[in-house]
Amino acid sequence: MKTTDLARVRATLWAAADELRANSKLTPGQYRDPVLGLVFLAYAESRFEAVRGEVEAGASARNPVTIADYKAKSVLYVPDEARLSSLVDLPEGEDVGKATDQAIKSIEEANPELKDILPRGYQKLERSTLIELLRLFAPLPTQLEGDAFGFIYEDFLSNFAAQEGRGGGEYFTPYSIVRLIVEILEPFQGRVFDPACGSGGMFVQCAKFVERHHESASRKLSVFGAEKTDDTVPLAKMNLALHGLSGDIRQANSYYEDPHSAVGAFDYVMANPPFNVDKIKKDQLAGDRRFPFGVPKADNGNFLWIQQFYAALSPKGRAGFVMANSAGDAGHSEREIRKQLIESGTVDVMVAISSNFFYTVTLPVTLWFLDKAKAGTQREDTVLFLDARHIYNQIDRAHRDFKAEQIEFLANVVRLYRGEDVEIVDGSDALLSEHFPDGKYVDIGGLCKVATRAEIEAQGWSLNPGRYTGTASVDESDVDFMGDLEALHEEFTMLSDEAEILRGKIDAAVAGILGDNDASI
Image (cartoon, rainbow, N blue to C red; front, side, top):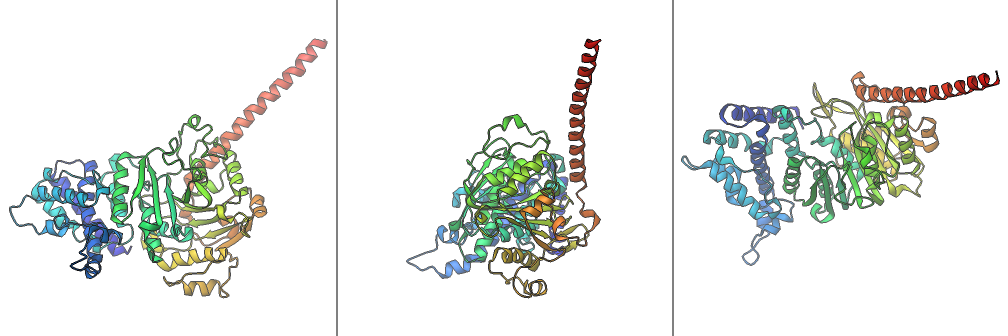
């Protein structure tokens, strides 16, 4: 996303919020629904028009265009009355609110998977306010690429409805991060699962990956998701529908609920779970097959998520997910779980990402990749560590992303490690020639290192890429202060507990000696 695009879209959203703030009875927490409904109509029409000419060119009198023809192109069918452009052009005196509610109804009727999902109630808005919102949102599809719908949702929520109390980043994972995960994961076909799916951006990028390889996402992929927040489930379904995907998205708290019977059921798992969650009721998790390496003693949910992702994989399955940096070095019970995971031979690739990639939080993160299919291969005993903290595109002062060629380059490093063919459609050939002139994988200081299980054990079972690749030039802001502080506090607490136990043993031993001595006197 270009800086100018971001600035233009944010200006549009600010203008919409100002209009609603000044001229509607809605609270900021209620701005979301009318905005997202209109944005949805704008993007549905844009995607529809993009394939309309091709679809109609293939029609004839004997074989007229059908809704199924558009579905085959992974787009929604948009009736005339549901087009945002038609609403913008309504003549003076028309009931715009009624027409907008009818637009929502007609697009749901043409696409039954949207039934009871889209927002309604536009007749409650002032006519002038609704007309201004229609005018603002009609141009949006030409201004933003990627998972634009998810981005707009997250940006709008974080800026204008903050009092809803939602943590930044729980819904939306930046486009370039998801694109990198997908390129390394390579979900060509199969069942895809995200137990913390938010706005569904992971599924959208899986679909785009399949389409980039000239296949139909709706035929190749089946998507399954769980989302804790009730009112976010319709958002994910809207996002899937926009991209021609149907999925089984359930409202569930994935710590305690398993609505998809996930153990061993999925070819691919992708997720950006909430980090460092505490106060999880671990007594409810006893005997749950999704946690095969045990429940961590630390008051932290990171290794509950990691085990869920591992357990959900089929025997040949792959997982790719975002995780707090602190999980790679966490000690005590979490280290024991990490050790078991490494010993399973499943950990495949670890990628360190710099700070400022997320729109609402600044922390750096690590991308973890698991691959059960590498058991029995030459990679079974190894892990590829990639330090990408010095690779990024500075969007503006506060935001970074990856350029397309940087994503392709990092994914190509993984492909070289796996012995797969590289891809150069996005222009990574120059970077490849610079770093791997012979076209074969080699360790490169500050960038990549293949470490054996013995080397990882020697590092205390750490999965921190920087420990293996050597030092790269990294900004000090990339330190995960909260994660490190939490890890240190956990270690302090554990040592204090051990000291109390040891002191009790010493006191008992001394008392025993003194008691025996008194008896002999």
